[in-house]
Image: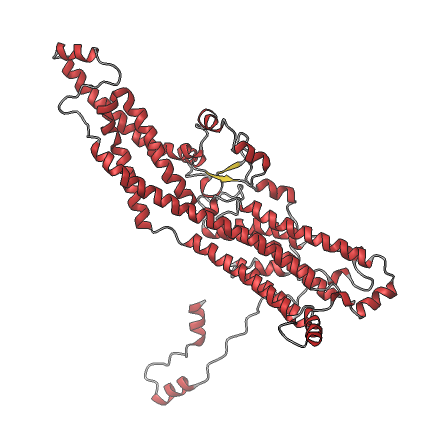
Length: 526
């Protein structure tokens, strides 16, 4: 195409020996215009166009089946093996490692789970029932514990080979070894052994390093849970204020109320997909997929969840509307999910927060609420922004990586060299189990800290999102019942008169403030 365009635009090459005036005339001649190519009609993105709601392709029950399921033997937790934990390769070994390298997520507790958590037999149960099903043990079997066991077995085999070779040439040594117990050891020159003093001195420093890192990771976990709790409280407060502040006196007001409710329900869903690689959908396998295909799979699951929020029937229903108010006018901006799911939208939670700001601006411009109520709503939406920024800060900023790497090297060297110090103390029978057990305890502390360093993979965010949505739906249905009780007894003439003149019980706060100021005569008393 470029060559064809150049041939079309370039001037004709003059013949050899052409006069200079002819060359100048050809250079100054106007260039011919390119033929106008037919353009494809562009899809309209503006919400003014006719709304195109998302099709409901998956039922709510099918969406819930995508979420992680509690383990059968410990229903208070979920062992999540989706996303990055699904597979570590195409080979059988890689799939087995991916099966083991999951992560544990504590679910929301109730009275029954708390009673099980505080049982007197919990310590015995943890060792006898759930030790080999422990996610920490499964994550550490390979390569850490395998390397420790291999080093221990190698040291024991080498030292025992030297001992047996010496016993063949010395009957006195053979008699001495035969009289020893299982934990007594005969040391010979050339055996692999280390004194225990270096491990005793360095173990204190190692414990401080590992504990300090684990405490910092736990602080990030607690902060993440506090942020979700703040998100739940703020969402409930914004929904309640919109329903109680904006009077249901017109179809436009009802549309604003309904759009606000659906935006609040969409916000935690967008947070869940914004902070995780798969939105806790176990059916998404991202191994071996390009970034574009991963985003397409996430968008497909997110689209299914949005479809049930923005395509559901109106909570008020045609029977709950006053006569003369069409149900179509109450359905708010069904084209919003299509705009939200565009590829150029980088932060969808931020898009929803901005859309909520536009809702409050529309409430202010329409006079549906006074300046005080609108200011309070703006402050609550600002908390949405603060929570979103804090969540992104935790996601994008790890603990200082040189500190983490140094602690990991120190811990690995200490545990890998431990069998050489255990052999002179415990002998060939106790070296391997003792070294593996101590390494399991030490590596386990560090592994738990690494799992909660990015807490978004260790929190049941789908349950938090369901909690917010259920609370908004409950307030929405409560408001719908109130409207049905208020309008259901009115005839057409009375309802039309009520729409023309709003009742005094839903006066705006600005009018109430002006009345109070006129009565009190003082701003402070008002």
